[in-house]
Structure formats: structure tokens, C-alpha cells
Image 1 (cartoon, rainbow, N blue to C red):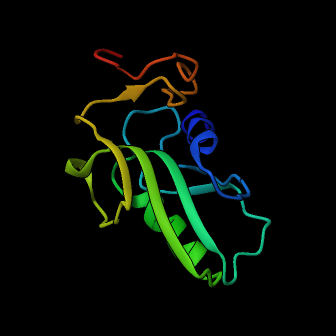
Image 2: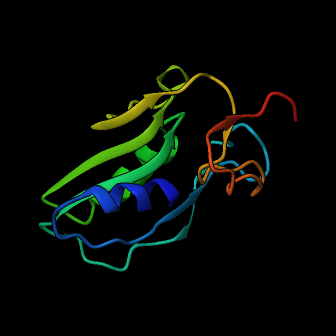
Length: 131
């Protein structure tokens, strides 16, 4: 949400924001591969342009799941924007349309990203060396 807030302030066209909450990590550092949708969309997407804004795209499993769910709602288009991309960890092919940076194969926290719900409030992007 921190990346989204910074990005939204730079976009110069009308937009609506809505949040979807997906989880596949729990309290670990590796994705379980089981995606859980804790919060779903309420806004109709039919014939609308959708931009998914994600902090980090890692295995691709969560994004593939979300893209599949959103396509069922028949939007005019769907694009994916992420701050950090880890293509070296992809298990599922996902097209990132707008990317900030390629991230190393390390566990990243800060700037909204967490480890077991900790460290989201760090003002910069950090790597956890030891857990």
C-alpha cells in the first residue's frame, strides 16, 4: 500500500482504488503455494481498465491466481505494475507490464513489505540476512 500511495500521487488521470488481500506466506519466508483471498473486490470490473499494483512479484503464483479471478469479471484490460520483480523465482509465468526494479533472490522487507507482519514500517527496502 505504501508503493501504491506514492504511485497514485503521480498518476494524472481519474482513478478509483480498491484493495484485494492475498496471502501465501503466513509467517514463513517461502510461499506455501496455497493462495488465500482474505478480501475480495466489490467494484464491478466489466469493460473497465484495471491496473494491479503490487509491491513485489516473486513466484508468480499469487498474481496468476488474482489475474485468473479478475479475468472472470470481464475487464476491458488488465495490466500489472510492481515495484520489485524477482523473475529468477518464477514458478508460474506472469507478465509484468510496468516494473520498478529487478530484485535479488533474497527476502525483502520494508516500504510496506513484511516478514510475519513485522518491518512493514521501515522507510526503505531492506534484505533480511538472518532469521
